[in-house]
Length: 112
Length: 114
Image (cartoon, rainbow over all chains, first blue to last red; front, side):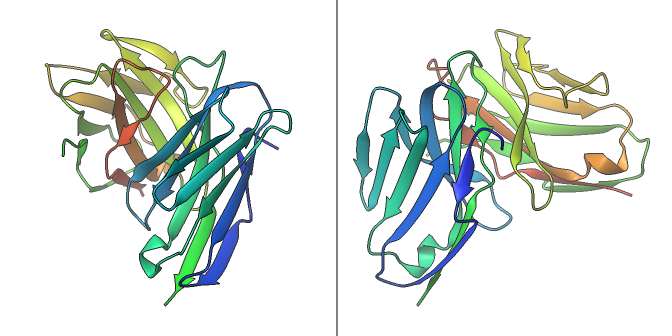
């Protein structure tokens, strides 16, 4: 599989529940970023975690990075209907300059 | 809040025609990018641009594609002779001095090639 694969591809939860999305990648990275995309819209940066970091928080978001397993997870706590969107992980590899490599994304639906 | 703006939001063109997609990056940013997303597929890197030259490009960015920064504000992507498979959403992005940091994306230009 390619660099940056999200799991699951689709997730449906009730408002108030937590949503966890996972991302795996193949090569060494400089950092890993999570982006959100509302249907038909542009990508919005959520959070960046560097290769020497293990966990990062931003509001209701928590990101973890396990470089030994080449994986990351994004946790959205206390989800809201407005969180409904696609979520993508993207990696910046050590040798790829400034290129982001995106995964296929997780489509999250939060039901009110 | 500063934002990346793209025009047009949607363009329909005939196969073989030239298309220019325009972007105005965030004013103090120095790195500029084009990505594309074919419907239902991943976001793919096309090209990055810094200091008035291409710094990196993907295999997708062949001789049919070119980029230009004609003045101090615009950043354009030109497709010389469009093919059906060029139909996609094209996203412009910019970033500041930190080339491995956060990218700011525009809302995209949807290109439909008939």
